[in-house]
Image (cartoon, rainbow, N blue to C red; front, side, top):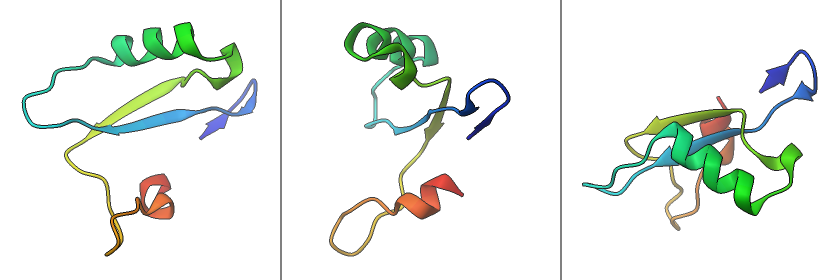
Amino acid sequence: MPDPLLGCAIKAVIALSPGAELSEQDVVRHCARELEDFMVPRHVEFRDALPKTDSGKIRRKQVQA
């Protein structure tokens, strides 16, 4: 997604399993521990489900829209 400082920023789009609980802070903290600073998402969006193809792969262009 567009970012005035970096040009573009990473946005995490997450679909949780039923009954699972996770906050935006949990995601950012985990990523900050495991990834380089420039790879940590600046935004986190939770969805009920991610769009998938018939073979089960995530439709990335639909997620980005």
